[in-house]
Length: 130
Image 1 (spheres, rainbow, N blue to C red):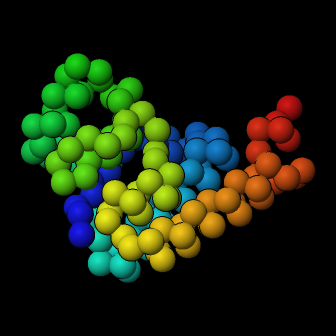
Image 2: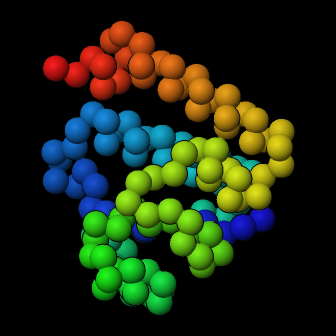
């Protein structure tokens, strides 16, 4: 299996998180837990709390110098950048982790279900924003 490292921005430490960002962070927390249960090595590093991890990676340092913290979240798989600026979907993370098709299908179905729920009236999607 692959090794996934997620380098994250400050996030909601200031206490001023929008509901959408908060939902996204909960989703990432859940998929990381799911992947770890499948035996995937997943590490999360927050720039505020884990500065040394950001400095330990030449790839991360280079991107931060070139693009600043706007590139975060940054996802590396086996040391190679797979995603930046936005969190990847559950299915993308599962694919990058090298999970078998049976597991990928579970994540794909969950994504479809959650996408439908957030678009439903009162589901918290953008359509319900004022």
